[in-house]
Length: 438
Image (cartoon, rainbow, N blue to C red; front, side, top):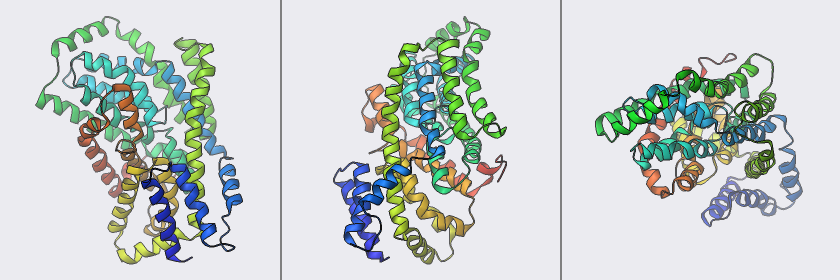
């Protein structure tokens, strides 16, 4: 199809976004515009678009998304993040940078059974931000730390963006889950080193308050603190163990995670009452509806682009410009993912960008699972950068701090994410080393 038509469609889409038209409406209007621009020729008529929006959600792998979100909300309502934090603060609370390091590790583990970065900001932030501020830490620093650390929720299983990428690219969701573990551990270690050095060099910790809090926590005894956190620690083990033990599929693991979260929160910790579950289901339904509509509309847009042969056209154009320079192509892809992530929902970026760049990735011989982790890191940056960073909006709502003030403080940690992403690009073993079917 004519290149000029492709330019017009992208122009309509970007123009609508610039005018403030909601993302879903922009995607659908741009998709249907092709039919009217080429009447009687292009098959993507309004009926095709509506049918695609419905049928794309009739998918067993997609069912994992609402289930993992529901289990994460149950864990959040059950106060699981607080029990995890107490365990890590028990060992680190008297060290320089120890409490912020405990926040990072808590977010790491909590994110590993939530799958949503904004949800992780809310659950961990509501509990840790007031506590660390009361202990003398700078509020903006703590809020920015929680915001960036929430990225673990989409790098580690059961990451919703990983599920979406796996479905779109035809990559194994189980392999993607495993591939995110080593990069996430590296990111956590580097972030912990950063906060320790930050407080060693700049100071800013009230040692007396920290010692009082540390002694208060130790008065409970390690056995009690560990007992309170053990069921939360077992959640990611059960999810991954079930998938890679060949016992369950990712979607079945999502079902198990819901049951496990209910048993732990209602009957073991007793932090969630049965009568609270209907309201929690309604809240989850609202979150899920937003995500599924974005997935549906973005998939329609992606299929329209495929019918227009956009992936082949863009791939051919870039391959000609690159003249065999794979490094150039990789940086073009990264630039696209990050720049579009500034203005669009990360899930929509994944759904649109993946079909476009797959021909180039396959031509370069890049592993689809490896590319998926690169895409996820770019998405993580999108979640915490204005103007559309969802995690930033959650952070400002729970902290009362201006969005741009938080965004400025996140910059050093964003640099860490970006540098690690580059290492992952050029050292595939970082993401593929422990993948069984690589």
